[in-house]
Length: 338
Image 1: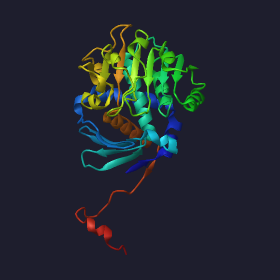
Image 2: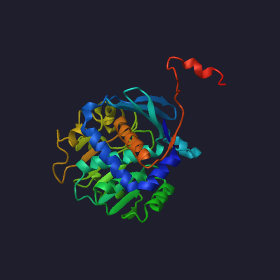
Image 3: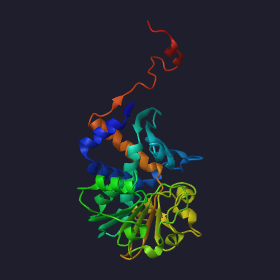
């Protein structure tokens, strides 16, 4: 079985570049969401605790099976720890043997950003040039870079209640092709934005802004509303926009639509990608991609990383599975070898 740790993944990204990886992940996800009915799909298994949440996210087709272990503990950063960490596994459906064990903390940030870019490809205006980033934590740079792959972003407006996080975002994004404009408030940051990403961490029913603050034709990629009782948007936005989700069965319990009083969902993203339902239909409609993170995205990126790791000879083969002369004699592993 191949092991890809964080050092291996950094080596892979160094070889191909984050831009190419973003494009390949976006393409892989678009391909897999277009074959939606070939997958065995289910909401993630969620375990809540006092300070956060731990989730298992499975997905499979007839050839391969994947799952991810991931947490969400917003208070971790105060103790010098990441608020989100993850590990993923990819296995062969034919014999059930795992073939990849992979770090997924970094990969989760990359696939989350790519999924937002995929939503923007179908829901944001083609001439979108101004991106607002609300919440400049660990996810923010990835979101901005992925959006720049699908739209010509000239200006990035950004805001966070943590000024150190804003300074970090500015430092990391300098020289990457867009003008960086910090703001003291959410309302100022989104006023002229064509695309808005929201990625705040607090587990509460927040209302970062309302419908009246939005520019006509704006597209929202809502990331931070990703668990039960955790939302970011005023409910008046939900009833006045074209709202698209990843997997309705999961999103209704975890996404912004927890706050919706009626059924406001236009469709799932696979329906937009395949043309079963329309995406953006005019330049003035407000669109919202209520993205909570779904297991099919992890499947796509794990499969891609497995291929790229072999292509660039990155990672290590580990002996985590027994290799027996007689597959019925597992006990032989305990015998002394002479």
